Every structure is written in structure tokens, then in C-alpha cells.
Amino acid sequence: MTRRSSPIKLKRVYQPRSPDDGLRVLIDRLWPRGVTKKDAAADLWLKDAAPSPALRRWYGHDPRRWERFRGRYRRELAQRPQTLHTLDDLRRRGPVTLLFAAADEAHSHAVVLREVIEKGVVQ
Image (cartoon, rainbow, N blue to C red):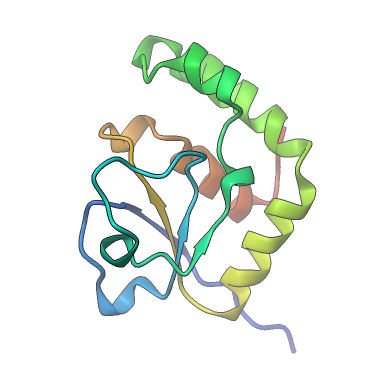
């Protein structure tokens, strides 16, 4: 009998911890400004889950580049199967919340990462 996977939640790292967060995984390459380790309450920091510095700079959180960013980031993630496997394994063990600093939650890399893990596809 296989265990069901928990849905992955997304949350800005600036929001307080809540009991239903489960395992909190910071997925930014850089530590978020103005947040202490205690306030972040991250159980794990997976820098490799973040977009490359070059992709992050190119995107610049410009919503006009969102679709192209999604494709490029998905291709980067395809080159990091161990990171994807780790996150998928964690969600099979219980609730997981991906933490990120971006102010635009709808156009955050966390949205793409969750989609890739939950659908099990990178293309």
C-alpha cells in the first residue's frame, strides 16, 4: 500500500509559522532580507530548488516575462532531479510548506516548483 502525498503549501517567509505548515522548506538561493533564522522557522533550506542567479536576474519578477521564466525554470529543474526527488519524498512523509520571499506570490518560482513536483513533470 502506497502512502498518499500531501499537497504542497506555499507561504511567504515573512508570514508566521502555523500548526498546519508541516515541514517548512526555504527555497530561495539567498537568505531573505530582514528575517532571522528564528523568525523564518525553516526546517530545511534547499538553495538548489531556486532558479539560477542568471535566471533570477533576467526574470526580475517582471510579470511580462512570467511564461518564458516558467519554461526556463522548468528546464533548470529538469537538471536537478535529486532536488525534485527530495521534495517529493518529503511530501510523501507529511505536509510541506515551501517558503519564499517574493512579494508577488502568483509569479513566484514557488508556484512553478510546486506544479512540477505535484504533477511529476518537468517539460
